Image 1 (cartoon, rainbow, N blue to C red):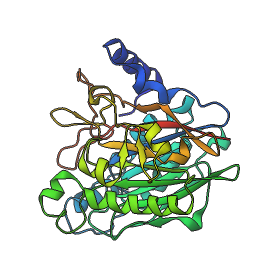
Image 2: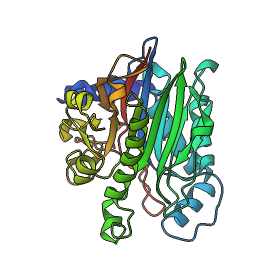
Image 3: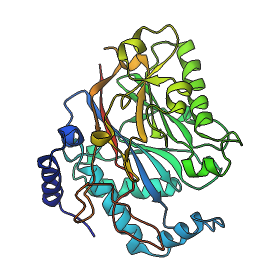
Length: 345
């Protein structure tokens, strides 16, 4: 069930007229020369076109659902690529980090779906950064970009955790991107926190990597993103990732701390996931090196939560899930994407 561009913009316009601030539409604007749009999106169970034979639920069901039903897979890819290409003046994000991607093949399918919508060859996505964490569910993180990458610096952090580190380069300036998907609240209730794979452990692993980078180079340009399954005021984000809302404090602190671009944001305006109420679960955090005018610079005020088209007659404009094999819903994802603009000197 594909939507055309005019329908998408009518929906967005109606959304703003209903009273929402325009923060959620900034990503549709084209970037200027020297600017790049970054996007993170939890894709909600994007599986590929091959039956891999997973035995555990729910991966077993998703594996067969997408691989054995080309129409379902095509619909999922159409919806994801349609929403992404609307960004950045119709070019899509320059750097796209995603979660819940079954395999490198699934990332390739999304890349191809995006490229099929781009008439200018120069805008095509050329690089995929992926490593299989080989732990838990088969829903890894990945990075898709049209920019140059430093492939030999790609690595996973932690043990069997969804924490991917990639390196992107423009004009000789290197941007480190850590894309992660932290333990869900439901899984932690089942004991993953006690096994050392809870949200606080994810935060500790990422902060440890940042601290090591900062010790070697306090000007390191690092962007951390992901579905943290926790809010900006959660213990894992504030006390373990050491990410807060005060940019001045991040710049001046003698210890390495991060700026969470959503730390002071209203969930009613910036919410990325809805369950009885709005939550900001999807974050973008940056190091002090991205707050100066050298190399890569983060345009902090450009951060946005980007709504995908809503389920018909949903006045709250909540994320419209694609659903599951037993309960297909025909939407996009159960999370909204988040974006921010970056500049390179």
